[in-house]
Length: 102
Image 1 (spheres, rainbow, N blue to C red):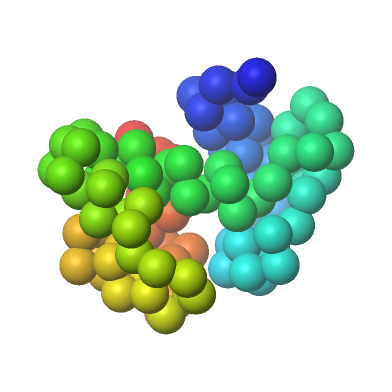
Image 2: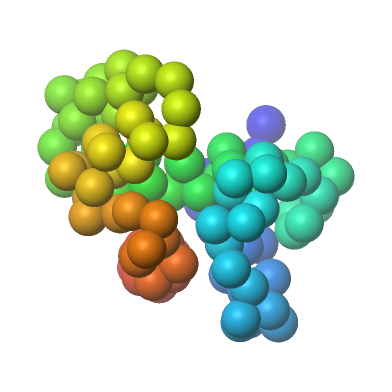
């Protein structure tokens, strides 16, 4: 298993070469093989991990449970990420890049 810290390093490196990439597109498509050491690496899983890590640091288990129990669908997911991490479809790129920079 590849640790989230390593995936974040790989993603930062990829984004340094592709600075204009709209991260919401591969997130929505659950695109795999865009970056990282293997073709199985999922952009959605990696970015969700970055968001979950932030929520865990800020709110602990209670916040992560809210995220995990948000229900199916993008609208439910972004409703929870908006309330816990100020992440929505409009500011997705900026907020993810901010989190990756930390």
